[in-house]
Image (cartoon, rainbow, N blue to C red; front, side, top):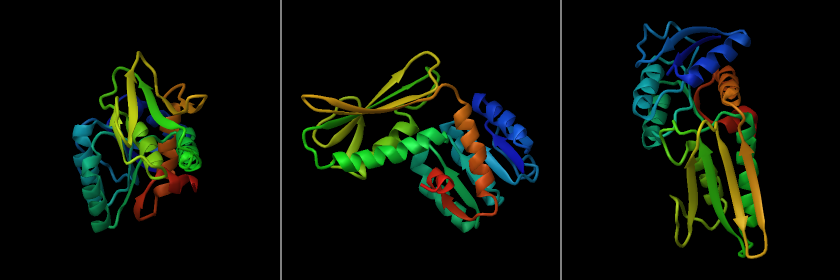
Length: 232
């Protein structure tokens, strides 16, 4: 495939290497908002930029009918508009708060555990996420996805950063050194604790998942997630 990388920071460079190792051609490495010309007839765009730039980056690509794999978090208030643009242009869009294959399996495990715990009133739930000090958004997009998976399958009605009340689900966001990403879900009672946890050792898992998603989305139309890619 011909892949355009929009947002060329640490993640973009790792994606670049993995994509080439898997036999793809990287035809654009862009740090600025793309144009039709700068996208160089790419088959797919992988977008890892920042919350301020993401919407415009994605919009330009979809309007040129190029499928977009987006891993930028912190802009999701505009996601419904992007989904409309996708459908209006008969294109394809896949957003992932985290493209790691392990994290997406963790999402499924988290939802199943939430269903199991829903009728056991002795336990309360909390989330904790640890990321590197350079991460711009808190809580992370991954933590929000985990929280949404619990809310959809339990008594909790909303998530909240730090301290909570009533049916709010607490997320504790910690920023520490160069940690790639650690996410934990705790169910605590007066007598014991159940914990599920995912620990990333480096960014390579995120990058590999993004490339696998880009391979999957070619020739498809519509709005997708990593659940579609993995058949979850």
